[in-house]
Image (cartoon, rainbow, N blue to C red; front, side):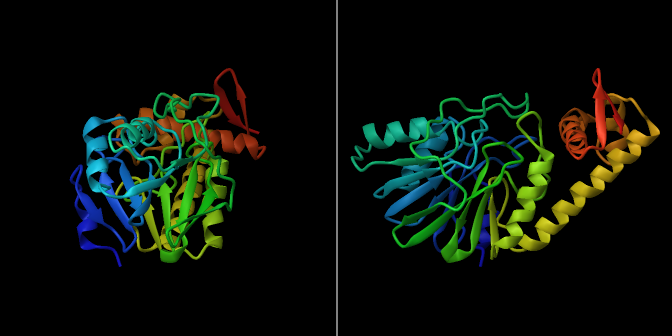
Length: 295
């Protein structure tokens, strides 16, 4: 069961989410991050830290205080967007120089994409993993079993981690609590994102632990609803392109996202482009000088 305190969003405060998982919220609330980015601590004694978060002194100090007396064996990265992985380098430096940890720290994750994403989601170039996770890789830690599940879509290097003992999926930005994920090309890929969502049906997941928001106790229902939402939006894209052939993204966004406040339309344009690129990949749309039309 989810600890009721998991609903508390206080930066730096340690929240016991499940028997084996603690959460520390980074102090970076925004329109894109919600209450902030969750850093998760897995296990006790010998531990893993998932998504050290932004490069922020207060968050680093909170993580060091939360893990005092413990040994960090693994640092896991879901992806290298700037609110997730930049805290890795200062965390390792602090563990080695201030805490004097001599035990090796394995840094697991995929490096930044060769292209830099979009203005919404630039990549952290400082992240240098010591091991690249492959889909299905297993990491063991003091009685815990952590499985890597490669889930490209939100980012090309996105990985979720499945804590098998608790049937808990640490979702990064693949699934978020209370909002949909922005898919921003060129690094974001709507077709890959939907396929990565469908992949989750093959796992016996009982809870999601997202990077933003609370634990989610209805994972399969949320996956189903998220896919349905994306396909419903795709249908609106097709309808808009039929009514406004040979249009730009800016000309289409007001129709496709007529249920979204206008001040969010610049953000919505990224996901709209991702939908249209998916239609192109499916052989249903084509581009001509930044104008799009159905085939």
